[in-house]
Image (cartoon, rainbow, N blue to C red; front, side, top):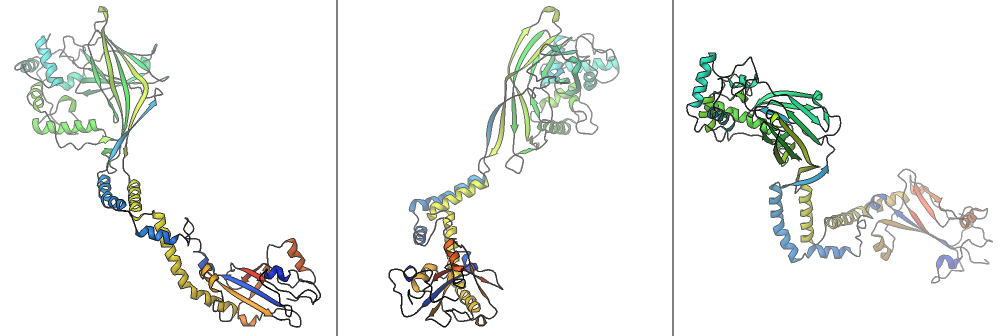
Amino acid sequence: MAVADDEEPFLSDDDLLGDDEEADDGSEERRIVLHVYDDESKEFTSLTTYHGMNIQLEHLALAHFLVPRRGHLLNALYDPRLLLYFYLSHPTFLQETIRVDDGSHFPFPTVCLRIACGLSNTCHSASNPCLVPALSSLQRECVNNVLFKNKGEGCEGVVEDLESEYWMMHNRSLSLQKLFIDSEMPSIKVVQGNFDVSHRVTSRRFLTQHGICESLNITQLFPLTSLTLILDDVQGGKTYKPKASHVEGEGFHVKPGKRSIATFKIVEEHYLEKGDRGYCRPGADIAECMDRCKARTYLNRCNCLPYYFIGMLGIAVPECSLTEIRDCLGRIKEPSHDCDCLVGCRRTNYRIRTTTYSRLPPKLRNSTLITLRQDNHLITEYRQLKRFKTVDLLSFVAGSMGLFLGMSCITLMEIFMYLFKSLWGMVNNSRHKEFLEKLLGESVDNPVDESESKKLKLSHEQIAITVKGCNDNNVITVDHEALGNRRLSFIPFNRSKLDKGMYDSKWQLAVPPRLEITRSRASTLDSKFSFDQRGPAEGQ
């Protein structure tokens, strides 16, 4: 780097040396200080300051870590057992949500005829003649109690006489299933608002313990809020909500010649699955499961099944007569204790709120009028949720540990990172020196002064290249052969308008105040120089 003798230096001695240093008029001294950083050690320089820890506060954090409070110690000793016991008990709770119904959840009713043809005073089917011309009130009451109430008190001899008389008239035993199936259902007229929608109603018949039933399915033109059923020529019936895989409902009785208005409430239930702190199974039907369990119990104890369970088990089973229903099935209070039935994970329950009755005109004594209304346009939803999850347990444990240790988990991690950084710096110090020796081709004894070394924590090395005195050409030379296979390049950066003047004809070889050093064979060093230049005295 050549400097002309007759030109004033770019930076004066006072600017470079400061007020406390004096320039030596007798000689020219240029001093270049190189601060060489190692990339591998620089990776850990900001670890302890990421969450606020620094060198001045690290001893306070360690002291806080070693001296927990007494109250915190007691909490740490007693809380873990209680928390673990509470977590293992798998606590849950029901969350209640109320939302507005859009009319799509309105139920379709099912109508059941409880008195079959042949057991009533009037026959509805010519193919199935009546059991007797007329039943007395005692006989009708006994049949009703045996079939639908499982009670046979006061009916000793009445049921036997009916079965004997039927055998004598038809030369075959009485089949209740056939009687109900062959019974003719009353005509049902469905009114939606002010419109007769009977032509859009499809039905399905099936046997239940309530008798022969017909489930209605109505094609909706608009959302339903109320529905009216008109049943003609009814001998006695019962209406209740549809019974499907995830639908449950309550029923109410309506006698012929009566009008009934029933209001209901819609409730949706969502439960946790089995194995996930719950006892439900998707698609499970607890009502059907309980019926199968009852059928197995009846078959084991009575060797027969009632008419509404025939075909449920998929095997050929004899049908129970009226006498067997009274003597055997009526005495079974609990069908079975071995029913492992799971509820469905999602169910819609229709609950009857109020039911009112009124008498129809005498000309409609064989008809029934039923009106279904939704109590309010709201749906109540119950959802089973976990009260205490795994993440809650970890949060409580972390909080208890923070109370016990007097610090948070982040602070504990910062202490570990600080210790790791300190150990890494000690081990990596020898690598710094070896790296610089290979870079410069000479021995490096870490010439950084003691105060600066403590400040930098051995994260970099400082190399001072000083040339005192003037040679012939005022040029500072660097022996590249001594560097071995390493090469240094001086690259200026952040050039300002003042720096641009250094690249004129007289200063084009001068060393700029800010430099960057690069290495040819290895990765580029993230290095910065502090530059101290001292030019010839003015007038020399």
